[in-house]
Structures are given as structure tokens and as C-alpha cells.
Length: 257
Image (tube, rainbow, N blue to C red; front, side):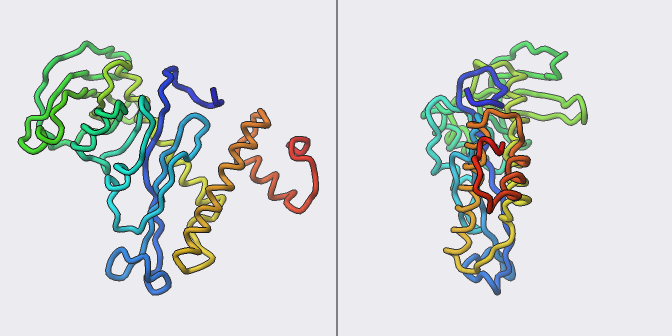
């Protein structure tokens, strides 16, 4: 097991999200997004076992999140945490048919019917655990299966969340924790922007931008591999700074660490 994987279940866990980089349209005319604005999106399917960006796609700013989500071939039995930007009832049905689990937030205007109520542990901040099915004409046609709806109130903020999943085996609190763990992919985007300068680009052509992003991903993967191989408790940040300071020194890497 890769260090840092905190969940007890054996299913591979992924968080899928995108980060948008704004570009000046006059300098990057190929990245047209809005009338006077350009943008590209970096989509990452982050594997929580080692926090590895296992799936990576780069598109222009106009491409919808669900469009990219459908193209990713997650392994059978895996769990994918996604936000409401990936809401697509037909896709939920497709994932279920492929035996891939998802955890997301239910849209407030979704029309549903409770099929079965399950008991919950109030001391775990849970408010409800229901088996539901969609009742909207189009929604029920796109997703004719029963799903699980879980209510959770964050004890720190008091905010109430409604989660939707096709996993009926894991504890309700585990489902809530899985969605909370989705924040790791946001931290990943923040880290690469701060440390790998993935927000400002050296070249202006599409190939130059794509190359810089791919190089950044390669650097991150090499750092993750070094961290895993060294078996030390140094953070990625510490390893990165150490390598920067010794970039032009010929030294044994493991001895340096």
C-alpha cells in the first residue's frame, strides 16, 4: 500500500476536477474562451494512493467538465469523487453499469422519491441515509436505477450537504469523508501552480503550452517517486527545495535526502 492512503477499503479512490488557466486572447489566439478572453483547462484524475495524477487531459476553456469525464476509463471497482459540475444522470448510469462507484453532491432541484430509509448515527454528524430513485421524466429515463442519498452536517461550519452515490456497502460517514477528501485535488492544483510555475507560460503556441504542462506533470511524478523510494517523511515541498538548491551538484540522491 502506498503511504498516505487513509481509507480502509481496497477500492482505488480518485478525485476528478479541473483547473482553469486564464490566457490573454491576443497572445494566445488559439485558446479562445470568451469574446476577449482565452483559457485552457487541466483535468486531473488524482489517485489518492500516493496522490498521483493518474489521468490528465488538457483542453481549451470551452470544453465542458462532463465531456471530459466520460472519456476517462476508470478501473472497475474504483470510487470517483466529483463535484456538481460533473452532474450528468446518464453518466451516473453508465458508471454504475461499468461497476464504477461515484460520490457527488445532489443538485437541489433534483426530483426524487424515497424508496427506503436507513438508520444513521447522529453522533457522526449524519442526518439521513436514503435509497432513492429519480422521478423527473427525463432524469428517470437517463438514470433508471436506485441510488443512495446521504445527509451530512459539517460540525465545524454547520453547513448541510446532500451526497449522492451508487455505493450501498460503505458506511454513510465514509461516503461523506470520501467527498471531503476531494479537496486533495484542489491542493494538487495549488501546489503545481505555486511550485512548478504552471500558471505563466514561456511560449505562446499551443504546442509550447502543452509541452510546459506535460513537463510539469513529469516533474511532479518524479518527485512523488523519489518521495516513495526514499521512504522518508520529507514533504514534496522539502524534496523539491532540496533538489533546487543542489541542481548543478553531482551527488548521490538518496544520500542527499
